[in-house]
Amino acid sequence: MTPRKKLTGLVAATITPMTPDGKINLSVIRQYVDYLVNEQNVKNIFVNGTTGEGLSLSIQERKQLAEEWVCQGKDKLDHVIIHVGALNLPECQELARHAAAIGAGGIAVIAPFFFKPTNKDELVAFLQKVALEAPEMPFYYYHIPPLTGVKIRVEELLDGIKAQIPTFQGVKFSDTDLLDLAQCINKNETGEFEFLYGVDEQLLGALAIGANGAVGSTYNYLGRQTNLMLQAFAKPDFALAQQYQFLTGEFLSFVIKLGFGVAQTKAVMTFVSGIPMGPPRLPLVGASSEFIAKAKAKLDSIVWPNGN
Ligand SMILES: CC(=O)N[C@H](C=O)[C@@H](O)[C@H](O)[C@H](O)CO
Ligand SMILES: CC(=O)C(=O)O
Image (cartoon, helix red, strand yellow):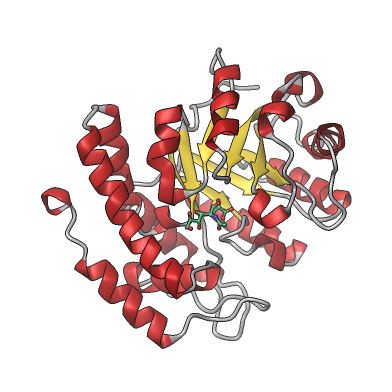
C-alpha cells in the first residue's frame, strides 16, 4: 500500500443534496467541497453514511455520489472515505470495488442491521468479505450501535483484526461508551489504527481519551469552531477548548430538544452555507419552518470566544 497521510482532525459526514422532487443533486457538490475547505477548514469527508442517507439511496445513486465527491475533491480534499455498508454482502462488495476503481481514499462499513451478527467472529467475517474486494484501500469499521443495534464492543473486535483484514485502518466510533474507546486506544500502542469519534456533542471527552479525530454531521457547519476547539486542546488551553464544546453543545442540546436528525441537519446546513441541500428522502420528512426559525435564531445568538 502506498504511504498515506494519516487521517486526523475533522471529517465532515456529507449530506446528500437533493432536488425539490427528491432526486440526488450532483450539481452543488463542487460548491459544497469549496465551502467545506474555504469556510469550515475541513478537508476530509465521509460520503454516503448516516448523514448522507446512504442506506436510503439506490446503489446507482451511491456510485454517482461517490464519483462526484472524489472528482470534485481532487487536489482540494485530503481524504475521501466512502461508506459502502449495506444489508447484503454483494452490494457492499460491489460498492467496495467501485470505491477502489474511482480512487477513493478509503472505505467504511457499518454492521448489517436486519439480520445482525451476534458475535465478533460473525461481524469480522462479514467485514472481511467486503474488505477483500478492495485490497489496496484503507478499511474502517463504522461502529454506530444506536442505529444498528449491533453492540459488539470494538475493543473485542480489534483482537487479531490485522490478520483477518490486512487493510484495517481504524474505526469511526459513534457511541457514547468511552470505556470501550479508551480500551481501543490503549490497545493501539503503536498507533497503527485511527479512532475517529462520532458523537460531536462530547468530542472533547473523546480527545482526552486519545481519539485521533472526529467524523460527524456538525462539522459541515460548525467545522471552523470545532477546529478551534481542536487547536485549543492541542495547545493545551483546556478552558478555551471547553468553551467551544459548551457552545456547540448549547446549540445541539437546543435543537435535540426540538427533534434533531438528518432532515434537520439538511435544513441547518442550507441556512448556514447558503447551499440548497433540499429535502430528505422518506421515511425522513423535512424540517418544519418553525424548527428552522428557532435553530437559526439560536445559532445566531451564540457568542464565540474572541469573536471566532
Ligand atoms: C446518529 C448520527 O447521525 N450521528 C452522527 C455521526 O455519527 C453525529 O455527527 C451526530 O449527527 C451529531 O453528533 C449530532 O447529534
Ligand atoms: C455522522 C456520520 O458520521 C455519518 O453520517 O455517517
